[in-house]
Length: 453
Image (cartoon, rainbow, N blue to C red):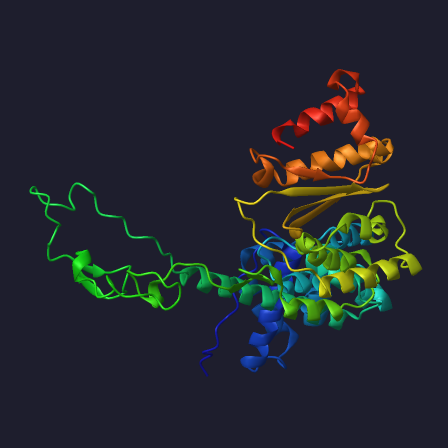
């Protein structure tokens, strides 16, 4: 009967001979089963093995240092060839290769894990294999954020680590797809270029009455570029009360919400205030940094912020043990209260006089600008270690310098800016010549020369 089964390819001795032999003998035994030759005599099976293996296997067969009887027994011959092709394994080397394996750029988690399992087979780890696979997987992951998340889990199993890693990998792929779609859908808008003044009129000084039809910025309709043809030319705007445009095209400033604050009347968004009430006490620096980020974003609404938040800022310094004590709890609750009860700020009026109020404590300085005794903005900053060693008069003058630099756009060139400070010794110093003041105060006085107080 004709055999229509495909013969396995010849044995290749190039590259990894052990892997090539394992693959060849597996294909050969599949062929024996498929061609119903598995139960044939040893003589037939050995002949088929040598025939399929090719000349290189035949040369090895002829040089094997075994008896002819062993060569004729198929099972014994297969065992002899297994020993011939299987190199001696060095456990130390195999473990070195396992422990230095890391995920490569672009390599997915499943591929990385498959290779780790393959390397672990030759390491003789026994019952510790799953735990060591888990540890190597965590250490070898290329994503620092994923590794940090896995290290926060208390004694996770290998399956749990794999599940978390796959979920993170899929979410990152979805995020990339979303960002790509988002970028492709961004609508870039630009203002239309105003027509050239020379071309807008004809030679006789007449307005341009061409048939160029465009969207009008005063009424929003499509008509020729002729102001007299605009239906809004004599109409009163229902928003600002001025004539010449419709309400839908009015550009006067209204009230709108911008990242947690209302513009027009500068007070805090009630939603953000209610969110701050839900903040709980912090258990580590990461959560505390998140809270302080929100507080610093709202700094313009909170007077003397750096002075108030000093107990919490102290925990964020390097080499400081995180301890959430009674002092930090009081500071935390006070900040939440200040956020919820933040004052209303008024807009700056260039025609009204300006007052700059400053103050300094042992570890912070603050400033506030006012008009009509109403605050426009607050600012505060903490003092460095060196600045904390300044004399009190130097700290108070440093607060004035900070206020002038922080609110430079308000005070620069402004006549008769009033500077308020609770440090009475300034009265005597300001009356004396600048040359009689200490060198550090002289430099600070020079920095305040940009205002006319």
